[in-house]
Length: 144
Image 1 (cartoon, rainbow, N blue to C red):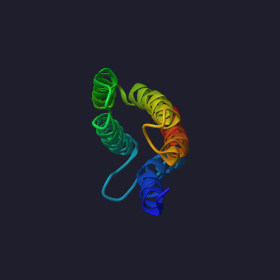
Image 2 (tube, one colour; image 1 turned 90 degrees about the vertical axis):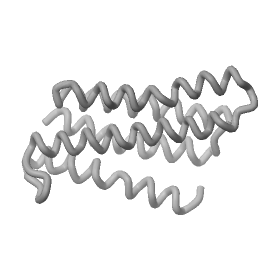
Image 3 (tube, one colour; image 1 turned 120 degrees about the vertical axis):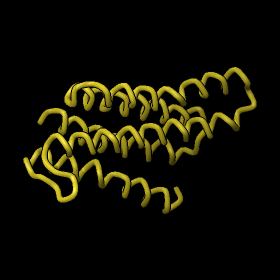
Image 4 (cartoon, rainbow, N blue to C red; image 1 turned 45 degrees about the vertical axis):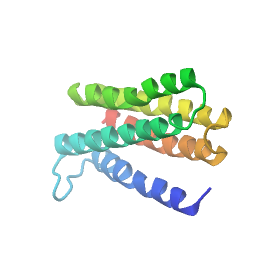
């Protein structure tokens, strides 16, 4: 695994963790505010990252030689952005649970890319690890 992918992936966890911990602790954050604003900030970040992960899948699909497989993964690639957008329109608790589920499902599907050897093996492991942390953070936020 390239070291930069690990560092960027772990660094990308910081907003999830800071925002979820602030919610669980009942704290407010400078420049953000209290509970409602923190939930909104967490949702915005989650939508951005979920959309980014869909884009990764799109990029992988561009390299397929099998046209049918490419079409399938191109379609799968746009679903995270749509799901994230829809989740952001829901009441905060429901939206955060929807995002938790979306991250878990996409993480497992991305692990499948590595199992099918269309993505590097390290990508599957990285996605599972990052997904675990993100899912716990989102679930903790949803429970507050």
